[in-house]
Length: 132
Image 1 (cartoon, rainbow, N blue to C red):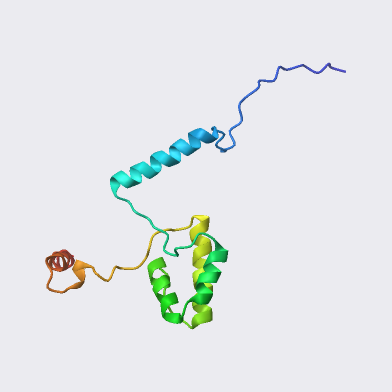
Image 2: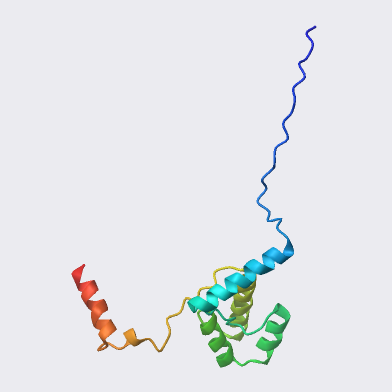
């Protein structure tokens, strides 16, 4: 029988996608990101104004339907349905928000200068659309 050949195995670094940097370095990156956001003027505030699901459920239990609708609009959730349906929508939206889902508010601000049909911005928009 033939004798098997011994091979030298090379030790290689494994890449697994985890960030193994020290905690201080991670905190420095977070601080740098916050500073950049402040410089650029990016302001993302928590539309729910609570930090945990328990606080949210307490806040929702003390709100009436119109207050819940206001919160839904500020969070980018369509405010339809009765109190129970809206409460479930807000809880689902908060869970997505706290997990880091899409944090873009999907509503159009009511004080938009383009909303007036005789505004300069609206006329520019109309010109662009008429070219197509």
